[in-house]
Image (cartoon, rainbow, N blue to C red; front, top):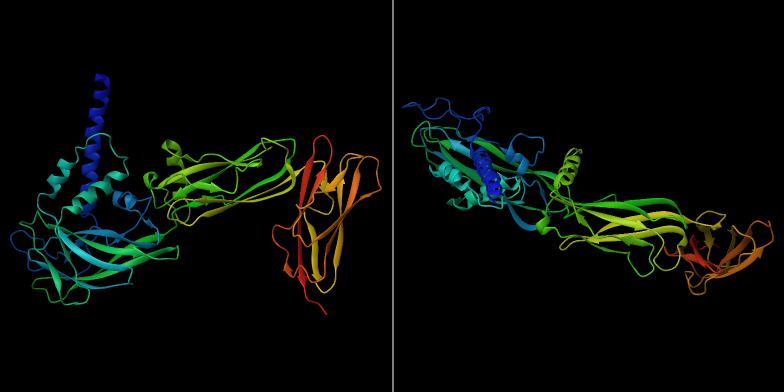
Length: 466
């Protein structure tokens, strides 16, 4: 117990220090940043700086930048789901002048920026942040510290709304008590995110006018963001290639990532399209990606161009193998899996491959009827080979699609080592206009002590011809 306390106390202190430093860095302007061009402040007096710009913004742009040394940019959400939710972006500034500065709202780049408001930080703000940095256990994960502390700080401020309808009406930022204690404040811009899913920059325009200065300084405050769905899947196509009916199982993984939700609001996805009785496709339980594996995955996505933020992720195993009861159906594997989470559009994952065995079509893994006229019957024959002599092959009644196809099957005399069958497909006159249905197929069964089914897709297009 003592050893545990000995370890935890330094961790709490260290987290407090990181917390305080991070939050102070979020609203303390950078001294090394070049001043924003603007009119000179009123004549310096009592040690106030000369040629001070109207306002010094820590940054006139917010966005997510994983390569930045600025924790505020690293922790800005950056990715938002389209919808009616109201989001906020904060722009920290200071008035280093000896006189008040009036800030006026000039306009916005689009109606997605719905409003803006101003708050002034009390002189005790740095001390309040320092006291707040002593956090109880359990500690939140490091990337949440700036966001959590920033939200707490912003919630305690007195907010004044800007009036975008009256460009001559402004809000006043008083000077600080002395040159070493400039008045700090924050402009918070509210915005919504609309479809489509893409990257964009929203802007809000302001003018700052120090008392006694004839010309105002114009500021463009920008919000770089990406409208993104609740989650994405990668890959969205799993190709298992050619599989043997006597081998397996074979497993591949689908990665499910969210750029907009953390694990507490992003439950494991539901998967449909597999796991039925006798199904050769099985989907395992999604496993949350955490710890070093999550850090590596997030870094991989952040290194893409453009970078993608990962806030939560799951791995979903997809296995193709012999069903618990029965045998593989031979033929193409063509399956769609659908993954979904609450309040989002489902995502599709396509599974492809071919299960090959000793029964196979000689004309390719689809019976292609081509383009045919529908005013008369259309017939075409194909050959299916069984790799063993004397094995009986039959059509499975009621399984082939569409129902209007007429099928016949006959054994073809040939080699003593194999058995060939000829299947004839007939589309009656007046049927099959347009592309044949996507699930069109002929189903065969190899008879014997270990029966086996072969499913071969059918393609074709019926047209009107004179």
